[in-house]
Every structure is written in C-alpha cells, then in structure tokens.
Amino acid sequence: MFQDFRDVSNHSKQNRSQKPESNLESPAFRAELMSKEVFTELICEVLAQGERAVLITLINSQRLPVGAKLFVKASNEAIGSLGNVNLNRAAIAQATQFAGGREEAKTFAVGEIAPELSELADTVLLFERIEVEPMLVIAGAGHVGASLARLAALIGYRVALIDDREEFVARGSFSQGPDVNIDLIRAEDWAASITKAIGNGHAVSLAIVTRGHKQDEECLRAAVTSNPNYIGMIGSKRRTNIVLDKLLKEGFNPEALKKVRAPIGLDIGAVSPEEVALAILAEIVAERRGGAAEPLSAWRRA
Image (cartoon, rainbow, N blue to C red; front, top):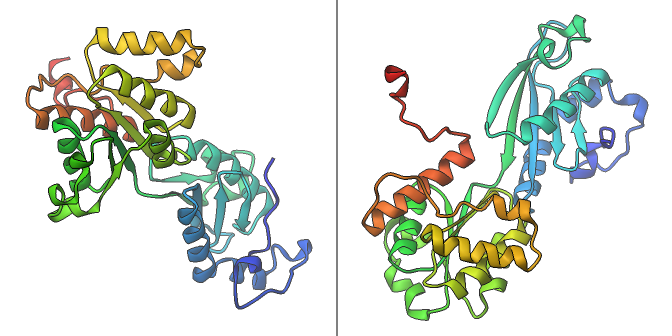
C-alpha cells in the first residue's frame, strides 16, 4: 500500500510548517505542491540515492489544475497531488506498472487507467521515469572489454571497467574524449569489485568478458545476487554452460541463472573486438528499451 501524500514541506528548506490531511486539496496547498523547487529537490534526492521514481504531471483537464504534479517513489510513497484523491490513487497504481516498463515518458487519458472516474475521462496525465542514466559495468578490460567501454561511453552510458591487471585499467589508455568518463577499477577481489560497482542494480547492465572460467565464475556469483537489469557473459556455448551448470549445482537460484545472456550479444557475425563490442551493446540497448532486435525491414518480407 502507498503512503498517503506526504507533506512536501518536509522537503522545502524555506517552509517547515505542517499541513493537516484535510488541506490536501485546498488551492493554496496545491500551489505549494506544484512548486518547481520542491520537485527539483525530490528528483535530485532520488538520483543521488540511485533509486527510481515516476513524476506524473496533469497536462490537460477541464476540471483540475493543469500543471499539478504527483511524485511516486519506488516504495509507492507519493508526494504531491493531482487535485483529486481518487485520481491520485489511480495514478499511483499506474505508476507502478509504468515503472516496470521500458518507456521513459508516456501520456495516459484518465479514461484509459481509471474508467470509473468518468467525470475526469478527458483529463490527460504525463508519466515520466526518473532514474540515473544507464550504467554499464564491464568485467574484463581486454580487447573486447576496452572496445565495449569506449563504445558505451560514446553513446552516453556511465561505464565502470574492471580488471585485476593494473596495466589494463591504466588511465593513459583511456584519456581522450568520452574515454575520460570511464571509471577504471583495479580488482583486488572480483566479487567485491563487481558488487560495489553494481550497487542496487537499477539501470545497471553487466558484461562479463574476462579471460577465463575462474574469473567468469567469480563475477557471475556476485552478479546474480546483486540483481542488475542485465547480465551477459562472453564465451562459447560450451564454456558458458560449464560456468552456469557449476553455479546451478552450488545452489544458486535457477531463475536468476536463466536470465543470464550467455553467450552474450546479438548474432551479427562479429569477428573483430570492436564488432563483438557492438553486438554486446546492441543486445544491452535492446533489453533496456524493449526492442525486438530484429531487422526494421522485416515487415517488407513478411
């Protein structure tokens, strides 16, 4: 259950006064809830914590104030008001579904999400996902790992490149353009480094492209318990099956292991390290965006 519309003055440095529950729909209170500064502070708070939230804005209505906002955290705690308690409840329920999808923004007519609110059927709400930019953690800084790090950084991912060989994560090799934004990590312990880099797993993808079975196993053990959005492991079917079967016998969750993309990447006939990196990143983007990873021209041949 959600916590009912917390007083946003708790988030305002200028105003610490408490508002009683009965004032939730008063014009004065709605004006405060719509304060740009309050919602900016909430967004910054969520991003700093690496959490996820949904910002709902009323963009069209004959009955309610356009611009009213409702901020829904991953815990279903809601701050703000759309000007109607029943609409607030319906919007929070829809926010939970929206947060589990892939779209960054989407509009809904109230008639779509709450047909019982017939008097507000023409009201339109904008849902926006609030979360940190996507992050790619790469275990292994060999030719494929380094190429993948550079390509991911180029398209705007936060990148953490991890290796236990100091010379492979030397800053001198990543000192130009987007490369300077790659976080280079020397792993004293693979599992500890992977776990720390993944954090809470939100908006995080992990590519395991190490040099051997032992390193793969260490990374995968840490990954399946850290729950990133995506886990992929390089190698042949035989090699990856050996690692996955071993973890299965050790008692790791079978459902978690089924989610591991192994061998990693899309089949584009990649040969060079750069092409392999492209195949990996294409699958990661498709997973994040909900893409089918099929030729866009396939409809012509159907």
